[in-house]
Amino acid sequence: MLTLNFNPFPILTSERLRFRRLTDSDVNEVFELRSNPETMKYIPRPLAKTIDDALSHIKMINDNIDANSDINWAVTEKDNDKCIGIMGFFRSQPENYRTELGYMILPEHHNKGYVTEAVKTLLNYAFNEMGFNSIEATIDPENIASEKVLQKNGFIKEGHLIENFFYNGQFIDSVIYSLLKRNFKKTQ
Image (cartoon, rainbow, N blue to C red; front, side, top):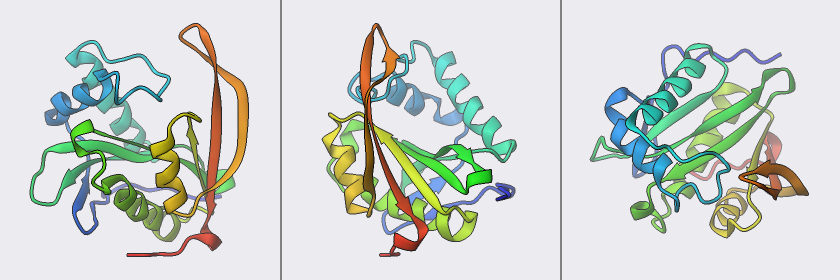
C-alpha cells in the first residue's frame, strides 16, 4: 500500500505558477472562489455564504494534509503570493494507488493556460513523487473547458454515468476521466 507523507509540505513551481499551502490569510480568495456561482457552476456543493464557510474549507483541506490523506495547494502566480485557485488531490485510495484530481481558479484567470500548466505540474508530483499509479477526474459533462484541460494532459474518458448524483433537487450526470502513470509523459 502507498504511504502518503506531506510533512514537510511540498511547495511546487511551474513556469508561471507557485503551489503553496493554504492559510487563513487566503480566506477572501477562498470565499471568492467558493461563493461565486460561475466558479461553482459544475461543482455540486453549496456556495459559501460567509467568511466562516471559507475558513472551514481551508481547515478541512489542512486537516487532510496533516492527516496525510489528501493534499490541495493554493495556486499563485510566481510574482504575486495572492491565491488565484485551489488545486490538488482528494478521495485518495492509497491501497489502490489511485487519487482524484480537482481544480478551480478565479474567473479572471481563465483562458490563460494556467490550469493546464498546473495540472501538468501536479501530475508529475503525483506520479513521480507521491507514487500514484492512476489519477481520475470526475467532471460535469457540460464542463467543456475542464474536459479540454484533461484531454490536453493525456486523460482518457473512462465512462459517462447517467444521473448518478442527486444534488439540489435534480439528478446529474458525471463523466470520469483517468490517466495511468505509464501513459503520463512529462512535458515540462
